Image 1 (tube, rainbow, N blue to C red):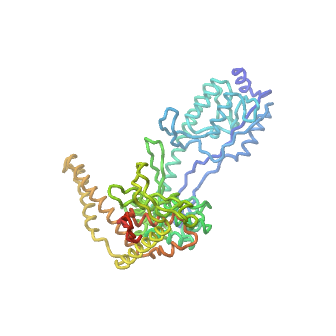
Image 2 (tube, rainbow, N blue to C red):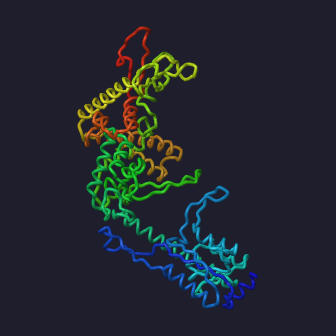
Image 3 (cartoon, one colour):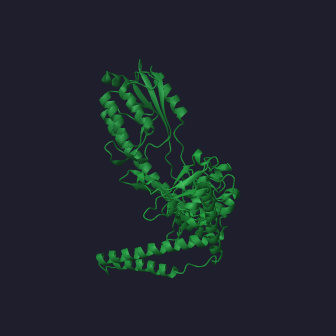
Length: 541
């Protein structure tokens, strides 16, 4: 049946046959030259147009089949797909490879093998407008040839550029596909060079409007820019990510794409170099072991290694942005997130008895204790549990109130210390960092000139780079602290009394202020005041 079907198609006879069409619009970018409009940020490409729309392709496919006596029963549509661009995929054996991903095309080949269209109709062949609509990838072409040769199902085109029914036609199809593949590679190289030129000029890229800027991607959107500036100042002054996001959500503030804000989304916006006026680009890193890739924004540098200034208005200063990045990169610590604990002191209060130190648990008062509704205690777990000694207990509401006063006092003390520091004071070790970087450059040059051995070079380089990392970390901490002076310190007492503040937000302030609060035991018959029993251990970081 397969050979007979192929022969009938070669003769132009489609009687009694059911055909499907494959229509596709390409997303390949065409070659373009930089125009004068690009200097104003309006990048114009001299783009080519697709052969036909998918509707026109379907109309031509249907007329071609029906004019030869066949039935047109289904259309496979691939809008906005690339038949050339490769993506990272994980193969069935677990290895990672680069492949052109076209689920619709691959599904069509599977249906041809099964001789059944998705709508249940019998399927005898596939028609496309021309070979370029079928594929630009040699691997996919071989898959199509395999369907024709091994399964006896014809794949043809209208224009005559595709012939998979004969040996000569298949050979020519391989040559054409290889040339089309090279054409796409050449175009991709020129487009990449064009985008690099745009980046070096600081011209904004395409894509959706970034939060904080208007549609031209250059002019600030005042309300959004103010929100981002306020968020950065709050974080540098000791604020909590979760609290900012919760506040924005309560006020109905959404991202530029209309989605609710998350902590990760806010960190992504504030760490983007664009926010301080630098031109940024997307860098993709691939983890070979995990088989995953991650994308993040990095600074674009010019030929002299200097950051490229973008043609857009900044929201933060460079120093503020660097301080925010340092804050985000720092290891997660107490009070940086939120949790589901139901009581203010759990996780922070610890037993003060010798050789114990267990975390106190919150326990509701029993009716026999005749306490107000909802009253609770903080108590060391019983020794029978193996997690404590059971020898310390304090009243919950009274302890929570004292914790509140301790947190407010701690922040007021820190705010007073901030006020005593001179804003804008220069980091005292800038020259030392510059000398270390000069040493690194000298070592590299000495190695290029073969003045030192490889063993000596790598030993010295490791020491210099360790010094550089240490000094850069110290500078970032300094900048983070001094940047806080440019904003307004957090008034924790005022924040605490807000009607919409959550317990998780209050707990975040507690955890940032204290690594622990030790509860001392009381002797038999003693009436030691609660304030003397709580010993705060401050979080010096």
